[in-house]
Length: 317
Image (cartoon, rainbow, N blue to C red; front, side):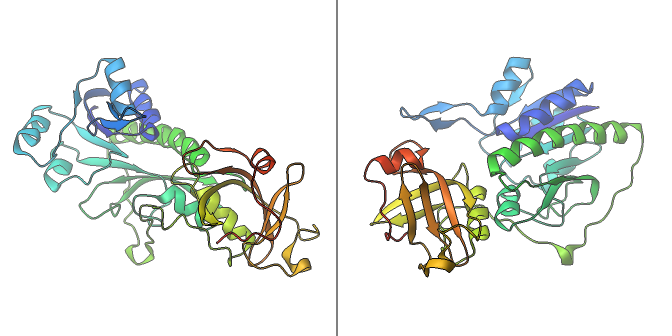
């Protein structure tokens, strides 16, 4: 099929490669404008734009997708279908319906669960054992269209958002290419979502990444992994924000378990360059593998503890 591909971040790259490898013709690639990056804050093209230009595809970078001139340009492409993979902006009804076969979207959750901007983060934060990828037909309501294909993916105990995102993006690209080939061959079953069962995954921010140490060690671990790499789960130590990464739940029999020593949530139970950093939670304790201070790079907790680091009895809040 002749298609328009809408996408911006690295998550969308496997899908762009997959549809091209499957023999579908790319009429154009639409991506978000360049954004300032790095210390010099120089404009940097999106990963999708970089790949599309390397492949010689026509690239469209609209400032406003609702502008009449841009809508006319999309119409002039004569596409059979639009494919949207993490484009980063809600499309109008006109753009969704312009291609002859409408538009489809790759969403990294098992819809109707986790509609919204950050389904991968929240699948981990909520402690889900599984998530997945859904290919759906687009409608104006957010992530509410009929399901064309869906597949499940397990979430590992050490998976971070970055790790799980890479796995889901590869799987999503393959599932998208398969679904487009099925659509090209003829009509396929479309399953309406159960809207009453829908849950939501809002964009994560600094507020949602702050650690509540009164929660169980497992739940704190889930939050830390969910916010890795961006924005980074954080807490305050001696008045200074500190980002934490690579958590491991301490076994109950470990002498650092707060249920054995009566520690308060957030209290540092161990701060040893050889034994690592262990912090009490509301139920259980966590060993923290890496930390990041403001304006500094992410380092191993043991290296951080060789400096000022933390002391036993300090409290993270």
